Length: 113
Image 1 (cartoon, one colour):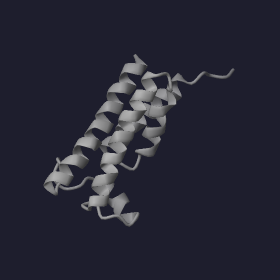
Image 2 (tube, helix red, strand yellow):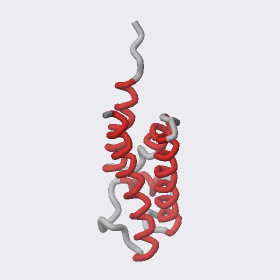
Image 3 (tube, rainbow, N blue to C red):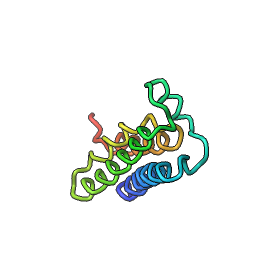
Image 4 (tube, rainbow, N blue to C red):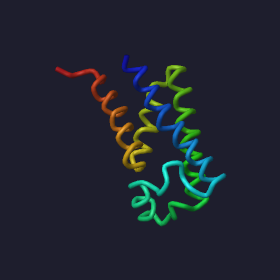
């Protein structure tokens, strides 16, 4: 069941990031309207949240998430974990779903006596 949850959440984050980035390129705005809390972190890093660079970052992350899903399906189970860690900046939704994914790995880790 953990595997299905991880795949669904990874598809939600990656698919939305890819869709939002492509949508922003075509319409000069994001799907949900104004940028979310992630924009504060991006501005702090010196990137304009409404720039084409940021749109490209969304497309890139979306493609990476989808690639991580493929790696996961081919038994490279930590690919989704890596993308979850790399997407913690995408506050609030991406970070929340990423934390759930990370938590599923921590919970599944073997316990030492």
